[in-house]
Length: 70
Image 1 (cartoon, rainbow, N blue to C red):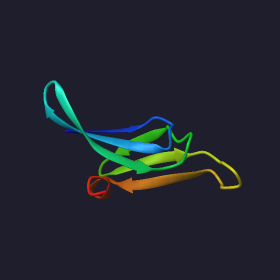
Image 2 (cartoon, helix red, strand yellow):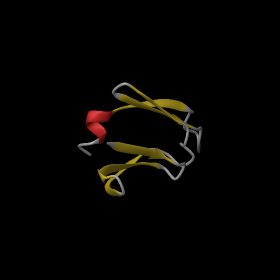
Image 3 (cartoon, rainbow, N blue to C red):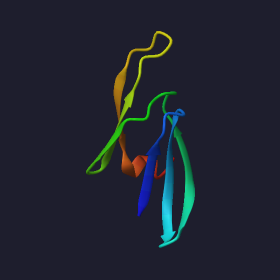
Image 4 (tube, rainbow, N blue to C red):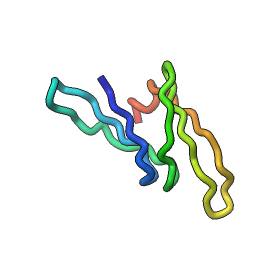
């Protein structure tokens, strides 16, 4: 009953479903601007983070149980 959104703004936004028509924002976890491609697999969220200002491109792995607590 959670939604994880990586839309390229530099955050993973997390929402919890309250009922069929209502959701609550649970906050945002910082990534990097441009990081929008993600894959939800089992208990992990993988996010492709692009190269930026001398930092290399990378794939970040976030455990869902840790995202929910941040």
